[in-house]
Length: 240
Image (cartoon, rainbow, N blue to C red; front, top):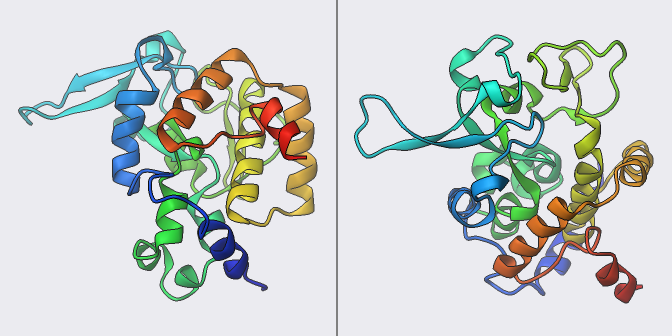
């Protein structure tokens, strides 16, 4: 397999040090406090409202907890994980990481020492709040279409085919997903397959940018210092 490490290094060499948070851990704190606030506190796939709740028997600690009654969410199997919010990489860490030499030599743990991977892992544009069980079930599966619309999470329109290793998201976020993938591919030189490019081109067309997606992107731009040009058409047009 041909690696894209030289391309990624060439692109990332032009980045300012403050382009992204310093780590995945710091990115999660920024997302919770600066990007998703008040009415924006809604999970990406299920549309569940969530809030900060105290952790029982752990004074001073809190966690983000979804309100299942706001979205009809039901656990598939893991009620404990379904009861918390996790920050999910829309493009999984495996997908952008395994193309790097550090991953080839020791996986994600080894890549945590690599400054290029750390920038990719902490990029706010690629992180969304998700119900923990969905994050775990989706794993590093690629997005696609699943026949039959099997529902395993109550009213949440999210399906996973564990055998085929495919996850199907709801229609209203497919364009957001597509534009995130295109951003990661352009910004970091991550390769997409032809099948992915075709799927995401269709999804982006069928689910165009809305004001909520645009507002989120602008908040992230204020923090990271650069736009997602696939969300801001004027920026994309200027680059052509």
